[in-house]
Image (cartoon, rainbow over all chains, first blue to last red; front, side, top):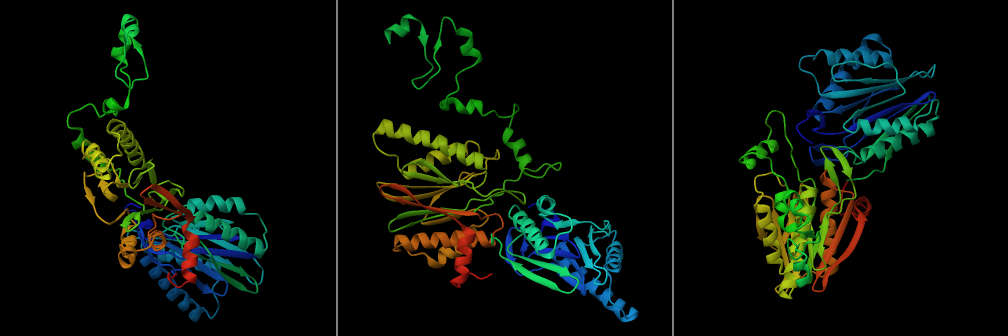
Amino acid sequence: MGDDILSYNGGVALAMKGKECVAIACDKRYGVQNRTIATNFTKIFQYSDHCFVAFCGLATDVQTVSERLKFRTNLYELREQRKLKPVVLYNMLTNLLYERRFGPYFVFALVVGLDPKTGETYVYDSDNVGAVSDNVNLATVGTASEYIFGLGELFFKPNMNSDELFEATSQALLNGVDRDSASGWGAVVYVIEKDKITVRELKGRQD
Amino acid sequence: MALANVLGFKSNNEFDRSLQCQKTDNNIDEFCPTLNIENIAQFITLPPYADPAKYLKMVNEKVDRVKIQFLKGTTTLAFKFRNGVIVAVDSRATAGGFIASGEVKKVIEINPYLLGTMAGGAADCAFWERVLARHCRIYELRNKEKISVAAASKILANMIFEYRGMGLSMGTMIVGWDKRGPGLYMVSDDGERISDNIFSVGSGSIYAYSILDAGYKYEMSTVDAIDLARRAIVHAAHRDAASGNIVRIYHMKETGWEKIEEKDTNDYMYQYRDEKTMNF
């Protein structure tokens, strides 16, 4: 794996849009270079009823950034007395990451969300210093991101319903991680709809 | 070969296939000496300056951002027991983080009574073990007797030693059965050649060793030995990122080697989890 800091721990996450639903998925490996230490390290965190963020990269920064962001979102909800929206969340993340512009965190992030009233979907992709993409159909981050992007583009169709979206996301993730030695060992997929959030564990290759 | 002499026929050596007639092809002999496996060392071109070992070493260490690092990302193991030798390997090839292939054949069938394993550079292992196969065959023809494992592994070790320091990467185990019984030698690119009862080579060897050391008994039955080897590879495949995909197992018996199985490690992992011997 070399001495590349973003592949030191490995890991991958994928987000895809459907019709009034979004899916976000990640692998569950925690390892140190070639050694796999745990298979229960999920990289997806919830910040509001319909707002999720996945962080991939150095594991210590995944934990730190997710917790620091939670601190800020908690204060927001207390002060504003209202729940977070996805656009607000991604702005907070951008600021948090850019504060460390000259000594950055080594995490790349995916922000996904849904507006439960209008059904509008949001998928954003952030680099490690806070550059956020526009609202996109498909985004991946992590060591296997290139392999998953290819499969995701293949399986993606506009306006999929939640079952089709789940299938597309799962297949793209599971087959993509089989080409990367630093990701895999199981996966978890969240499908977020207006009225419910479904969490499913995928049976993946354990090598 | 009187007729050949009259015609001025000259052959380079007794195994030469390319026939050169001296009178008409005089110049050709000089410019294209026939490539055969005996003078192959001339054709593996070394860089055209003095002390290539010193310069080639730089290519393996990080100098000016150049670094070709052969990491032995694999798990191979072999152990002797009462009924012969069991050899088990995984089948994954990684290039950095990318899994280049999940179907590499890491056991090289040198001849029906000798096996070699592959770890490190695939080309190095495959090539030199094929040269070893040729030497073993010639020995057999000249001496009317099969070559011993000790001699075969020594031939390989000596060949590798000539290229020491030039960046060959091989961690191979030579397995066979000769008149002294089962034989197992580990030969590596730094010229090491040692014999023991249990060996494992590669990045996953640390995990395989723990399983092997915990369950090994010389008096094991064949079924238990195969199970131990399989478990060792499967556990290594689970923990080591650079090992996995398919497990291949061979059994070296007095009558030669037999391929036992070639199965997906992932299926075994879920089976062991149900049996509560693996946890994830």
